[in-house]
Image (cartoon, rainbow, N blue to C red; front, side):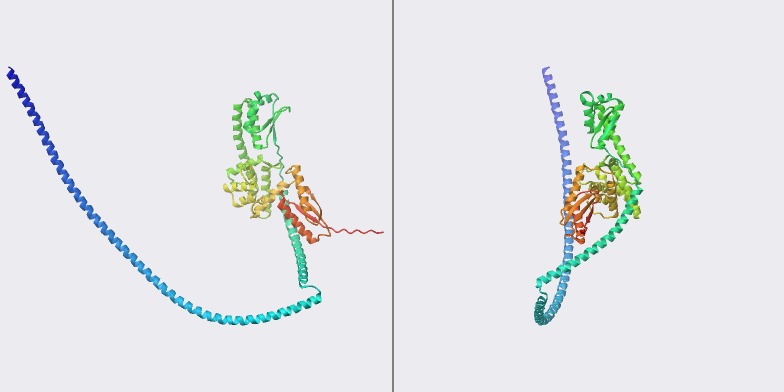
Length: 522
């Protein structure tokens, strides 16, 4: 029984070993077949690579041969061109050599001619020297004879003649200047007066006086406490949001808003009226109402700009320029409202242009926009004329209008008649009685400066500033200055006033020279 079991185990082990060997043989055969296939593929790839390398080598050889052929052709072309240039240069050198030979021959002929001319000049020079010596001797003899007859030396006679000629020429020149100035001045003054007076008569604008305070009426004095608020928090909030001073005093049924900026004053007034009408007055409400009032006020400014352009009859103005034009309604200069002033200048510029046969619309446009820089001169550096001109140029205005804006205070050169019209209309609007006000100190200082400048010239007896400083009358010493000297004195005084003073409009200088003869009958 045990032997059968052992035999069975041996047979099973043998069968297992045989099965394992069969599996190994099958795997070996598969690996060997794969190896053979891989070797065949490797040999095929190697042959393919060798073919590709041979093909690349042949292509590279062909490319190199082609490049060499191209380079050889290029070198041959360059050599041919170089030979052509060399031949051309040789021809040019031969031509210049021929020209140089010709010029050398001409130079030799010129040198021989020059030698003969020099000999001739030396002969003439010796002849002129002899004649000059004889003339000098004759001149000396003549001078001695003249000095003996006149009793004057040569320098004294020269000074006498020069002084006499100078006096005669000066008198004649001054007389002609006076005659021409008188004739031209009469014609120009008559024509200018006619045009300006006609423009002023055709325009009749009202005078608007601005103040630095606004009054807000109240329904009752109880509202003052609401404006002030608990411990003054409401009034402080209003002042902080608007930048104004609110004056609450014993004046019945009103409060006063004070500010030098009229736009802030108007915004504060509108906001306060809205708060009082609504009845809710507290800091949060105040800020929102002030913002709304500012937004509404910008609409009012734009409407004022549109109104000005409509009244003058001008279209096509940029919206940003219209905003500045509307803001002029809340800007004053010497107490004169600048919006109304711009309208006056526009109308009078147009009227004078129509009298002269010029473009009335262009003149009105220049007059209307001449002071838009005054709205910006507090936020930008420079004069309002130059600031306004640059703003107008940036927003597409015509160069004629731009130059009229820039030159209406003569800060730049006036180039056209429209510049002069805008300046003249500006002076008329600002100089008419009651249009502007000045501080007494400034007014007195200008009068003192006028008299000081006039009295600083020799020969002036005394001077008086009259017509609120628009004329200076100068009385001169009759014995020290002649009529011609008085004319020159007036010119010198005008030049010094223009150089040292700043003033609106123009100043008339009148020099008075009179002769008084006093006799006593006994």
